[in-house]
Image (cartoon, rainbow, N blue to C red; front, side, top):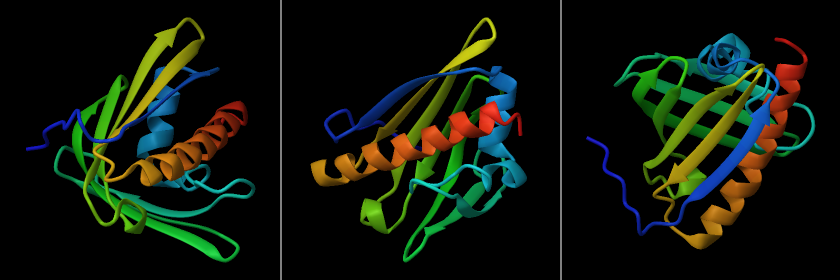
Length: 149
């Protein structure tokens, strides 16, 4: 069971995307679409993704750019298509600590507000790095939505 720790540092980012919640949910949950935009690096996206989309199912990401790479894995906690996705997030940049990511999708006409909350990050420095990384990831997502992948 995953419990929220409200004292741990948290990242929260809101974005308004010009797409429906179904399309955005698919981009988050289908490996052939995930590889097109999931990257914390600016510029070209290089990602390998796998997922077993169900509560208790695992996912893994191998994201790279030039000399840098990020490997992340996690477990899906909640899959509520197309409104909410909750999963753990663990890798070297979380000090191999299981953190928790919640993606909420709120439809507004032809647009969707995405609220990403990343909780249980171990340090403030890790919050800073993840704020930048999630910002780049959501920029890539906005590009993917505009390309109508």
